[in-house]
Each structure stands twice: as structure tokens, then as C-alpha cells.
Length: 142
Image (cartoon, helix red, strand yellow):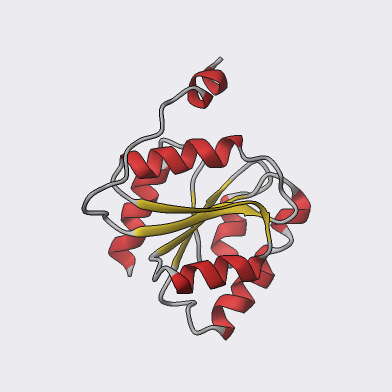
């Protein structure tokens, strides 16, 4: 029932002095956005500005939105193996755009493990409760 409770949570207000800006979404072809929404609200409650790019989002869109919004972090929800297979493409695009060392990546989801995050230099979390601490840790690393 905890999933039902999290779906019924109220939308937190926009932070007045955000700790940072996070572009969040499900990398394509992942259409499972319940966990992403719970993490987004958790990050917002913790004081981060969140820009939700949605579900089944192409890696290039994450790069473009991060650039456009001067984002500090990209947060990925990865719940399918085909979506996990797009992590290398996102990593390549960030390098090509000169953003690899400027934008941190945090990720979690049913289809990824810590090793997948380590492979692209991302931080890995298992729950919405971990997300704010991961984001704060990523901000310190910047």
C-alpha cells in the first residue's frame, strides 16, 4: 500500500531558493513513471527545482533540457533493460556537449544496479528517500 500512499501525496510547492536544478525523467523506452514521480516530489520537498521531461525520453532531450535550464543534475528512472541500454548513449552525448564533468547524474530503478551507475560515473539510489541525499552529495562533488 505504500505505492498508493505515495501516489496520493500532494504536490510540494516550488522552492524559493533552490539547492540546485534537476532534470528528471524516464529514459526511453521506459514508460513506468510512478517511481519517477515519487522521487521528483521527494527532491522538490528537499528544496531542489525539478524539471520533469516525462517518460520514454530520448537521451538527447536530457542533454538539451539540462543545457537549456543550466541544470546541476540529471536524475534518471530506469525500470526496463532497453532503457538501461541507453545509458551509454546518454554518456556519449554528455561528453560530446562538454557537459560530462559539469552535470552530475543520479539514477535508480528496477533495471539498474550500482555497477551500472558506476560505469558512467553516476550515483545510485534504491528509493525516493535516498534521492535528496544523493542529490546533495552530487552538488558537493560539482
